[in-house]
Image 1 (cartoon, rainbow, N blue to C red):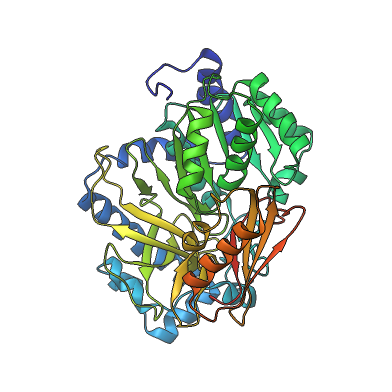
Image 2 (cartoon, rainbow, N blue to C red):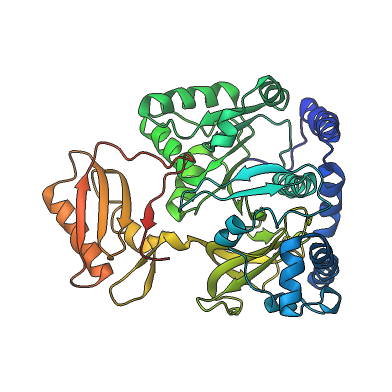
Length: 456
């Protein structure tokens, strides 16, 4: 594994200390000063971070109530007074915000005092894309949080970086400015939705030429590339990669293992989304720390009630960066577990014990229970001849397994897979297996193992 303590090169120091701050200043972002604040506040004791959150929450809610028409009405309807907020638990007096409400009230969610707003949308991998807006303050806070987490691993802006990504936003704005910026900051973009064997051969060659200090991308895409390189006998563990950042989807244990083995570097998992923000990131001690200075995370059960630490539930986010287009008690659709343990790294930031994926990554059985995707994946991934796979559950609970198979996958192996799945799903479950030539990625470039239309 790479040495986290070695000093950055001169170009990295110039890029992170001069060129990037100049860019942010020209864009009227405040990420440089915010990152410095975050690097101080991360070492506060948990009680002090809680007090910091509470003070920011009170002001944030007052601003939203006074400037955002949607929340002006909502607070009045619920008799909610932001000045009376005395604990983070007081947030539960407000209703949740979901994608349907944002679509219905998108104009009323804009602050009357907002500056220039930029239109964004989610990839829509679990349904209809969501259109929303962000101002410069929100962008600055998210950039600062990501920058802080990057530096935990001994890398910085300006270190050579491979980005294996597939979002249409990142792949359609390659204008002259962006291309120049990527060259200046030594960021090299590889399109994650182009993962044919021939393209992956090209990607491996590019990675070997560039010799990146860090790799960033979807867990599924990076793992797929790592497996391809290993099958081709192409080493990637001799390039000096210090860390591989994964985000955008669930990181499964086998993905972490193959990425770390092939790249010879630790995997740092990140959790966030374009709409909910940069929520949490893994430190070198292994904990997934929340960006608690800007974000309050609740975990709720199916009835909307908070669950205790150590119990899983849906993540609800309140992003306090700005009230330009506020997300207050926003239901992410992601399932995770909060921990009450403090990390050995010494940071006082709260910890997510586990992120288990989206609600649509869970399978529903005939008995009515929810089953995590891993229960099905274990029945398939190590079977001989399995090249790629994807589970799709229909609303009627029937399950289809798409398989890209090699000659080793015999009829008896296929039957053992099917019987194992039936056992997992329960007797009488409708399970079919369909062999296909390839499994295309989602529009975003992600390769989802499980998609359930019955678990919502």
